[in-house]
Length: 199
Picture 1: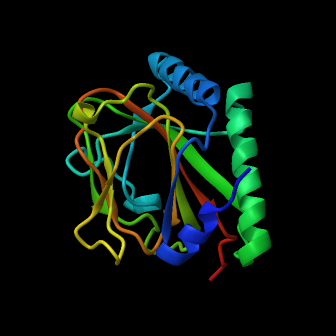
Picture 2: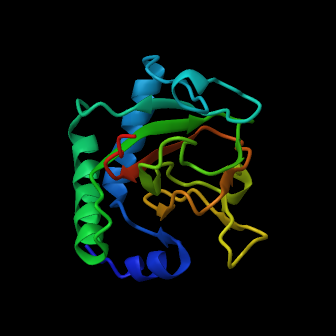
Picture 3: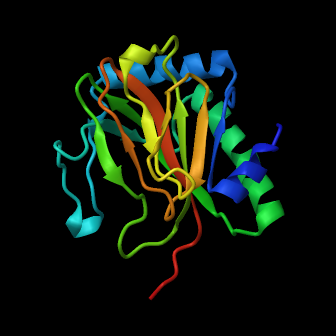
């Protein structure tokens, strides 16, 4: 795997990696997500953690299915790619990344996610956020772009949800939002985490 994009991640706080997934893997994950959603496995996504957790559709409208390690072979291929990324980052940067957790996400037409950052108020274990897009043949008029707000572009940068594309950024440093989509938009969202410090 080519890890030249790690230099951009370190310098700018984010990286956009096209063709992170081969077309057949991205398509297989898209089909798997659609099947699982048709089986009623997805649930409304929430904000907050623990007792603060709540579903607020006016803030976040996607539905998600958390990965439990018991998915099929196509999910295993994706997990293998993430393991390579984790090993490369730990080797070069000594960040102590311990695990990746994440979920399938589906934004139905008309849904969005307002501007936010990923870490919870009392949990700093999320180090790097990852978003991997699955929909084939996504068109500009379909909407659903990710907008990130790095310090170098405070006005925001729009990123189209192109199949096989990975977006990775430092969780605590980069506010971001998802614009309203006009068709079902599937992705895999997750976080490389460090071990939680017991207080």
